[in-house]
Image (cartoon, rainbow, N blue to C red):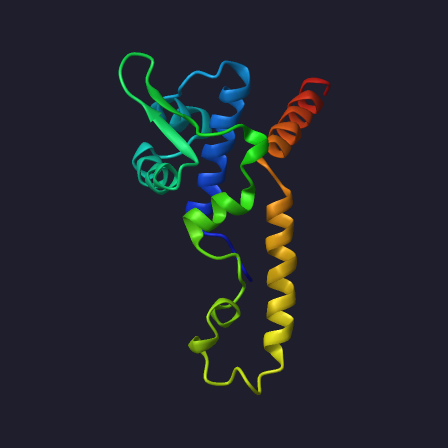
Amino acid sequence: MIKLSTKGRYGTRLMLNLALHYNESKEAVVLKNISKEEDLSIRYLEQIIIPLKINKLVKSIRGAGGGYTLAKHPSEITVCEIIEVLEGSCSLVDCVEDPDSCERMTECATIEVWKEASELLKNYFESKTLQDLIDIDEKKRSQKKNK
């Protein structure tokens, strides 16, 4: 089974949380609040936020009213960007990105399957933005209210 690590999954939840606050009030959010809202460890969020900040997906604001906010509008941040920052390449196997990682590249037939599948996965993640996740979140909340 191919799986994202908790870093990728929780990082995407962290970014969605920031996106929801970005659209609502544009105010910075402290990690402590995200930790409570998402039921995630504050220590883990502190580790995850660093590469997101370094790669300019989030920005920190110091002082009163400080915290973190998205560096750009939710419609401008793709799920692929988040995953690549936190997990690395969206490729299913190393040899897709690094042909030197395998001595069998020239005679390997399966590489063509891995390349095509990796491309499909990457294209899918590139087509989904944080705004798409906000829309899904709103729909799920609305359905929950109506039950």
